[in-house]
Image (cartoon, rainbow, N blue to C red; front, side):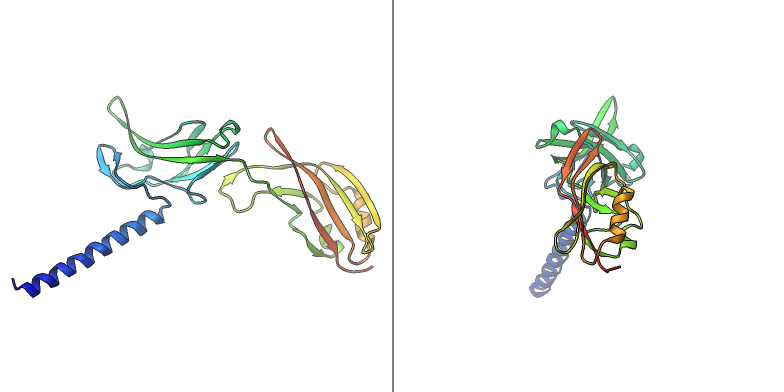
Amino acid sequence: MKRSEGRRNAKHLLRLSVAGVVATVVAMLSVGCFEPGPVRCGGVRSSWCNYHTVWSLGDLYANTSNTINIFYDVNHPFDSVIVAVSHGTATKGERPECQVFVPDSMIGRTVTVYSLVRSGSGYDTLSHLDYRVVRLPDPDLVLGILYSGLYSPEVILKDPVVRAYNFGYDFSAEWEVVSYRVTLTDKDSTVLVDTTCVGNTLPEEVREAVRRAPVYSEVRFREVVVRSGEEERELEGFTVYVDFEE
């Protein structure tokens, strides 16, 4: 082989190897994690990390069910994988999801989620990944489906229920609105209504005052107490505005 041909072949192989490395890294990042170095994978040495999450690479929320997607392959199908967590509980759901629950006592600490397969009388570790345990974030408050904003009385009162949701997170947490204070003032800051409500529904006297409220009146929801499981929190609240005059 000529020296020039050898150089061309070497450059070609180098391009292929670089492209292969880039493709491998992109593929590993696309599943949500990258674990440097080999891990034991059913007796086979492999550099693949078997976990990824659709919402975070490093956090689990305490006192709620967190969804984690399991990466699996033909050698280790989903049905054969066992999921375990160092503190808390882990259960498998619809492929490829599993649910991980960690107690409040682990907030600020680290837990490890394991992927295992049976091997003889024991188990082989496919992979493991550490997660920081954090406090469940405060929910967003809405009236019906309305955030803070400018609305007609009819729209404000269409669904007069104060609700609390965590939008945009891949965990399940149900919040109950226990109580709140509602204050209705006109554009001159004159108080028309100021009352504390138990439950999540606007009382009829408040709804009637909103129907009669002049333009640019403010309906402020404050001291909103919400509950999820055994935990209660008080939130700052939000404001909606009446946008036309009777």
